[in-house]
Length: 495
Ligand code: NAI
Ligand code: CS2
Image (cartoon, helix red, strand yellow):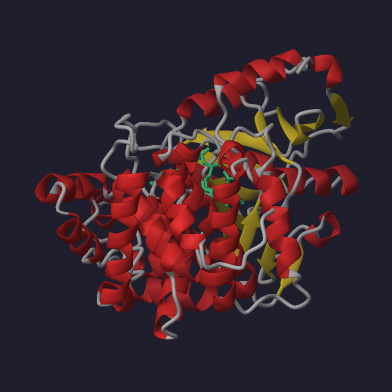
């Protein structure tokens, strides 16, 4: 599409704020296109000077930090509603970019910033695995080398829980009240989980400190939603065609949602004026989003990748995949939800299909397929347990699990290799080596992974049989034939 066909709205931006009130851990694509945009709108509307963001990476990516610094931390967000309509915003809400990784120079600067009384909120997007909690049990992974490091060297932490802990310890020693910790990662009860990670780690250091954190620090949960694909060279070329030559720019969809538990003892921006829903209990929102949006994304990711499809929009362009999602939502997922008041779930799932079909995003299935061990428990398996206890059919979930197991072998159904990017990738590779084509043994070995599968599903022989049937069909007839067999009895309407 030629640049001339593209509609551009440029949002004017005010002078950048000089004060920093928020520290963010996880300076990735999502933070730049979500939390920073809400704050930018707040700053543009109010002219407030005290809510600038200091944003840090404690893992990759250092290059992005350098690029942002080179441009005075200004960057662009390009919101595509379709391939012809884009809104370009310049963001100035991030006032400081830090690289505080183990090999980076800014760890002390980050801890000093987090100890500053002007900082009242710390937000996080460090991915599900950045909390070092077992996806199955929710326990802190004390054997993980990075956590073992933080237990041994608490004053120079390498992890997000360790960084929060050291900053809170410094504030307590200095008599500075604690900041609120706002997790923005795709996990259920993400505030509670973050609290568990920090308090569990604190128990290895000082029981009184752990008790103080548990009693005095607010960890509100939040549900976040906006599709922000990882940037590619093609995206950068596309933006260059719009006159944006910005290495830190991000592309995303127009849709955005943020639902936050209102627990900020030291105050917060009046986010609700920018459309943030401030609620007492975020659980119904996050469960709905994780199971309907993210659960559907993961189905597309594994089954689509096995079929050699590259992007979300290319997958949902195929009737079989739309039918798969309809069937999953109606049979496996929606019956498990306590929906937020006034939710029209049919409109919500129709909206998801429209968002997934946005071909200007080129959202790669490989990106979504990453870290399945950390994602599947909350996306498919928690709901699967509830349905299987009701002895209801969860054969779409079973097909998804079969697709995921097959995907972790590292090739698609035609033998094309793909990377398996997951903290448990070595375990998966060993299981595939050991069991080879013995599908029944392979499935039993995967189901025995208690870090991933809840006990009720591990012991559910009907579920194991359904996975075996699905895997056999995938191998013999391909993805669309496996979907067709599944949906023969479904009364689902097509999109
Ligand atoms: P990204 O790849 O651009 O950035 C990942 C960020 O996580 C980086 O800042 C990296 O330093 C940090 N990180 C990774 N592993 C870490 C670890 N072990 N310890 C500390 N930091 C670590 O990814 P993106 O798009 O920013 O997504 C990050 C998270 O945001 C997702 O995992 C998800 O939970 C949440 N999210 C993302 C959405 C999206 O569409 N991209 C939408 C909704 C939520
Ligand atoms: C995706 C999510 O990467 C993934 O696993 O399912 O990041 C998804 O794009 C967001 O949650 C949308 O809000």
